[in-house]
Image 1 (cartoon, one colour):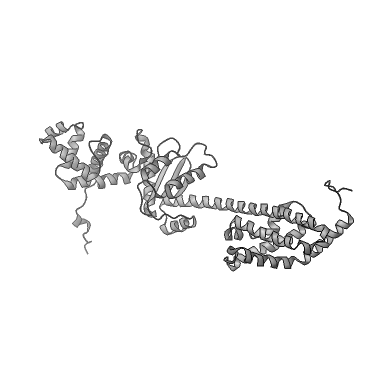
Image 2 (cartoon, rainbow, N blue to C red; image 1 turned 90 degrees about the horizontal axis):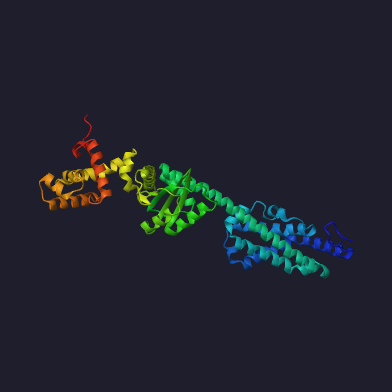
Length: 409
């Protein structure tokens, strides 16, 4: 006689042995659970260090596993129910309390306890079958545990991705710093200073692993990295960047063709919002400088940003270049203006100002010392020329005593 699945039907004696084994299994579920708990405490040092709630959760998993084995031994079938019968509502608590490796150690202890009791639980002839059933069942439970952890990892990954997108968006909008710190702490962010925002284009058809690869690569060059994608724009928020120039050059290779702009290094999360705004303003204006390096600093795009209507760039040119030149006096503004208007000729400038060419050289060097921009370099001379133009158009700065005067009563 054969069963519907093609296997030989059990003999009456075998059926009687299995019935007796099932009866003993049911009668000893509580004893096996107690033995398992004791063995866990004796064999696994990490188990004793868990909190009472965590030990209770794992103990329940072990008890459910033993009880479910009795049902499975009686009617071996698809293991799909193991997830609910063994792990019940515990997956989230279990995956937070212990790693997959420790979960498999727990399963091994349960299997060992049941195997040790095989001589007590089954007649001699039924013992090989019971041992085989224990091994098959333990395999199914191990696969089910791996599935639990895989699903938990996917869930955490989805949550982390959503949280990361919220953080990047908050940085771009300059959201409250306390809220940002809370979210970043939840994501495991470690960096507390030296934030850099890099923006560029995303690939037309990024692969499913593109963001993960980008985040992994960014992790080699910075203490922390956040990745955000907004339409066709790719945003990197880097914390604790190592070897800034080299790292930015390597990371720019992961962006799609086109300009890649990084904002100034920020000392805090609040400043990171300003860095992001500068980077995006630079990305918008970068088309006006086709020969711009890749990546390019937002501060190197000040003339293009002014032309595109960036008020922050205009203020930077006035405050960082024009007014310091005025304050330095010694004819720096007049000398720089003549030098730029006369085709960058030292001799022509000297004749125009009735001074020696060496005097012009000295004043131009002073311009570089005061502003940080060298008028002898064509690109930097363009920045200085733009600063002169916007500075002359800016409203005059009020004297200090006027700015601090009290309102009349």
